[in-house]
Structures are given as C-alpha cells and as structure tokens.
Image (tube, rainbow, N blue to C red; front, side):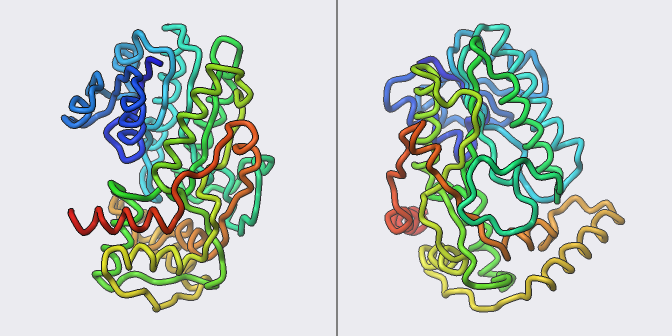
Length: 329
C-alpha cells in the first residue's frame, strides 16, 4: 500500500502513520506543522495547507489510498474557518484522488454528524444526519462526510469512519482537558450519572482505519458507507472521567451541575463570546452541555460484519497504558 495520511502530525494521524510503517506500507503525510518524528518513522513528509489544491496535489502523487484524517475540531469558532479546514480541504482531497487515479479514500468522521442533543442508546448507521447543529464543527463535518460518500464510485471507493472520544497515550485533547480542568477545580459532572458513553482507545481507532482501507482494496463491501467505531464498552461518564483522573493520580470528581443549568450557562457564554468576538473556547457551550448530559453508545454490528472490526485493547488495558505514559511524561 502506498498511502497518504492527511493530518499526519495529529494524535490519530501519527498513530495511523506508525501502524502503516510497522506493517511495511509506504507512507506520505501532509500537515500544516513541522513534525520531525514523522520522518523518523520513515514517512515522506510535506508541510502544506489542505485548503490549497496545489499542496494536496503534490502530496497525493504516487499514492493508491488516502486516509483523510485532518480536520479542524472544537466546539467553538468562526464558521468560515471550519468550512475551509473541513469542507474545502475535503473537496481538494477528492479532486486530487480523481486527478491521480487514487481508487481508495478513508475519511475520519465523527458521531457528531447525527447528534441532535438527545441521548443515543445503541443507535446504528441508519440514524439520519442531524438538522440541528450546535456548532460549526458539527455542520462542516457532516457536509464533508456527505460529500465523501456521495463521491463513492467504482473508480473512487470511499468510506467514512465515526470513532467516538478517541483517547490513549499521546492524546492532546480529551485526557489533557479533563486533567487540566480537574487540577484547576473547574471539572464538573453534568446531568444524570447513569448516562452511558462509548469511547475509543487509539489502537482500536487505528485498527478500524486499516481494516477499512484493506476492505476497499479487496472486496469493497464498506464502500459508500459510514461506520460507528468504539471500544464497544459503554460506561457511565463518571466512570470514564474518573478512570482518566486515576491514571493521572488525581482524585475522582464529585461536583455536579444540573443539565438544564449547564445548557443555560452554555447558551449565555455563547452569546457573550459572540457579542465581544472572543475566539477562546468557552468553558461551557450548548453542545458540551448536551454531550455531557446524554448517553452516546452505538451498535457496531455493521463494522463487525463488514470490516471484521473487533476492539483489540479494552478500556482497562488502555487505562494502564495511559497511566504509564502519564507517569513517564
């Protein structure tokens, strides 16, 4: 396999690069930043901007599969910035695939594309895209996923994966944010404590991406489809958060916030931040309030049947590895 990984310097992207190189695949990457460790892994590295087609064009040359992992993530920010990073970049990736006759494209999406603010308990991929968007990230990721799947054809087989809450050693978002808020006393549990959530250990997310690419190159059963990906171990939000805190040798969080109060606070923060053009992410938004106070766990039957996906690393084993990584950091 000759693969291009967009966003190769990121948490998931770099893990995919590493896994591809370990099994002997040729890998190129493109990302905005300079990440010397990618060269150490044996990847061909291009520092570029996915919103510029010429950069994507140069990176895609001589590849037969693309892992489009790069995205602008977050719960707050200017719509135009998200549109460029998530939609325009995806258009350029598709265009480059067509120009270079690349036949296989794996896209990293998110379950947020179907989240409408209500609990998701054992839902599968038949749930339609939401029409209620809480932020630009949701909307632009939905637009990008839809475009990816709409372009599926015999000449360009595409698949979208929706991993939920990826974590593990090297995580720069979920675990660090929980740990930082706990240390500063700003961490709260929101809503009902029995709500369950799925998460995805990094190795499992990587495995799903490789299985999808291999499937596209073989029988292509997954072509044109989206798949939820997780550890398939739904646990309560307090359990997941406190496991991460324990891995960092921090005490469990016990302070709670009513879900309606959290939503009102989020809406208030959003109005204030919009009024004064504050770009920093608010401590609470409507999206975060709803995410923290509802259930999110998924039926993985489709991924199990089509991709032969089975999580390799359990939550307990993943937490042991996270603890080791945090201890030695």
